[in-house]
Length: 187
Image 1 (cartoon, helix red, strand yellow):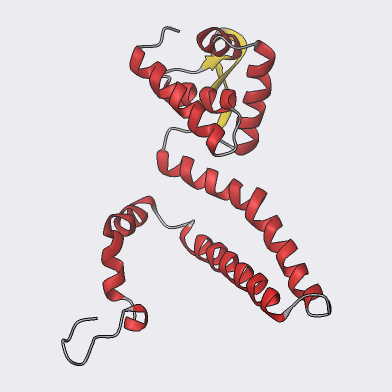
Image 2 (cartoon, rainbow, N blue to C red):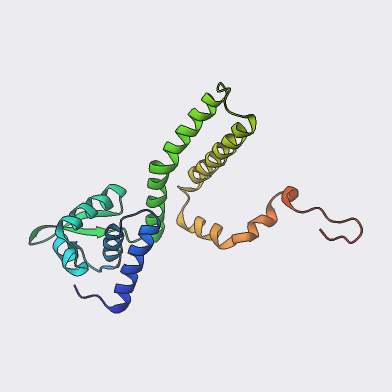
């Protein structure tokens, strides 16, 4: 498969961003290639196109499949496995968020909850330290709960919510707004 300069740039950048997000560069590049491909690709196609070892491609495809971002498909007349990636960006985002939560947030919440319980009985921990630990736990629980509320919303609803941006703040309580000065009427 021949890549245009723009496609190469996209794939290379996706690989670079992947490393910043804690994902292997090759895994990210293969994901980008499959996402941009207009037809299913074999592991050999991927290895040749990206100039990476076949074994690296195989391991990377297994990783993408474990995340639910790629799957095997078959092509009539070809016994080899072919691979395709999710094509809907909203579904990709949802899958990545769900996996990140499962792999990172959920285990962290478990440990933080244990620390909160154990900390109550640990005389060596200062009260203000317990408060900070509790604040982190409360913050992550709020994020997790909010994610759970939003994850099954239809993409159209999410688009509308995201397009509102800071406008949502106008509908919230004024508790977080600075108090106005009595003399000038300004905060």
